[in-house]
Each structure stands twice: as structure tokens, then as C-alpha cells.
Image: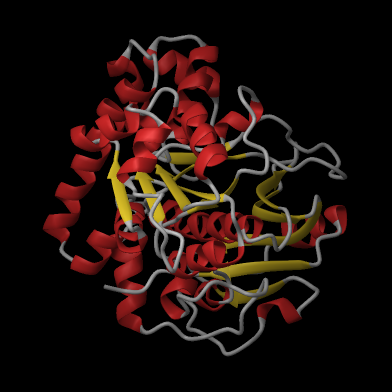
Length: 397
């Protein structure tokens, strides 16, 4: 097994904080293995016996964990897939308020556990959210939690790079490195997500139409979402398509990337782009390269935000003259880094110069897949430059 960055992140959390840790992320990204490894008492809501223990209420769970018994350390209780419990928020709130000083709590979910921030009961001050991602170049090179924003560039060995590129960053297929296993794993994962999870976690009735949308989007990673076209393709309303894409994002099948338009003349404001969380099934080289980079950049901005290193967002920039830069990292609401992705070396994109001037971004990179690693600090440059993608990614979490 390869060490994970999240082992150290959660160890740091429980060493310094009394709050619950919420660990959210896609199915099969490694949350269960981590929870089992850390916990003194592990409960999985998918297990009938564990579910009964949770449904009996906070007092019964405290008794099962023997919280009335003095110990040299506070026991860690892990509740896996707890988001499937309809009243999971009120349950955790009640358990933490009643027993939070007698134990530590780790709650995991394969759907977004921060969704309730927009409404419902408040858990302010009771938890910190950490979002687990597949393996990345940076995590393979340095599995320790990042203590600062950027790291020195390091060279990833060819075998690790090829495994990550060819088999994706999800632990099991990346470690097995078997094409046969990968194909079966991909089919089973998509079937599980589009059928079981949608059925269990949403009220969608037209499951076949949503499944059709999921398969359409699987072939359009890195493309702009034209909701009206998608609605016509599957014969539903535009509002339904928007709602279903939000569900696919909620279940971590993919994510929407919204355009940045502040201080950009004639910028697009509405059309998001769509990226899969798993780049391994994408056959088109350009789309695979861009999706591969997108997964790394999303992991960086969410990890930095979760660790309190700042508030980061991932966007893209496009204007009505069709000038576009694939990615913009926004730091504390200020454009920070523009990144254009290329599979092979080409002339430096004029859009980088244009949008760096428009946005005031500090850095602007054209990151190229087929360039070999260079022992440089990409972030030492203030004007647009061409850099190896593997060098740039090595400086991120």
C-alpha cells in the first residue's frame, strides 16, 4: 500500500482539535480503509448490525463505545457512509453535544457532506470538513500533509507517472495496474453510482434518463455544458438537466467548473464546463490530458482550503471573442494562477497574455504533457511561460 496524505491530515486534526472530522469523497477513494485503520470503534451504515447500533441513538452508541470507561486516550469512533441515514445531521449533532468531550468522531460519506451549509440545521463549530481525492503526482511524491502552499518541484518516476496516467488515481486500479481489472472496475463503479446511489440518496424517478445523461457526460469531459442541447437529447426540461447534473456532482461522478468573469471584459458568465473525477476511461488525448490536470487542480484548491491555507476556487476564463484559458486558480477571491493545458508543445497561447492583463493573475502557465520534468520552480515566473505538466503538478498537494 502507498501511504496517503489523508492519514496525516486526520492525525493532525485529532491531535489539535476537539471538533468532529467529516471526510467526504468519491466511492472507492480510500475513505473506508482510512477509517478502519484509525478507529477504536468502526461502524458502517451499510452494515445492518452497525446501522441498528446507530439507530438506537446517541446514548446506546456511547454505551457500545464504553465511553464511561477511563482511558489513556480519547477513543476514536468512525461512522462510515453515515450520510445515508436520513437524520444523520441531527444524530451527529446530538452525539457530539452529549459525548464530544469523551471521544473523537470521524464521519465519512461518498456524497457531499457540506451540502447542508445552504440550509437546514446548523452544525457551526462542531466539525471540520476534509475532502479526499484520488492519488495525484504530489501525493505520490510526498504523502505528508502540506504545511505550506507550494512545494519544491520533484521528479516523479516513470512507472508511477504511467500508472497514474493509464489507470487513474483511484487506489485499487492504480495499484493493480491491470487493464482487465480496470475495465471491470469502471463498469461496476458507474453502475453502482448511477443506479444504487441515485436511488438511495435522491428522489429521482426517471433513473434510466438520468443514467443516459451520465453516460453522455462520460464522453464529454472538459466540454462546456449546453443545458438546452442536453435537454433535447434526453427529452427532459432544462431545469431537470440542471438538477440532474447537480446530483451527479453531489455523488462525485464529476464536477462543474464555472467561468470567472470579474474584471474580464465580455466574459462568459453562465456556461460551466464538466469534468469527470476519473480520467482513466477517456480515450481522446486532449480531453484526457485536461481532465487529468483538472483533477489535480481541484484537489489542490480543496486541500488548501480544508487545511486553512486560504480560500481557493478553481474556475476557467472565456470571453465572447472565444479566447479561453482552461483553468484559473482564485486565491482569497483574487485571480492568482492561469493555466492552459496542452498535450504537446506549441506556441505560447496569446490568451494567457490577454487574461493575465485582464485579471491581474500573478502567474500564467502553459503546462505541456509531453515535456520532461525540469528542476525549476514554476511559481518563480511572473510572465506567461511554458512548463512541463509533471513539474507543475509536483509542486501541488
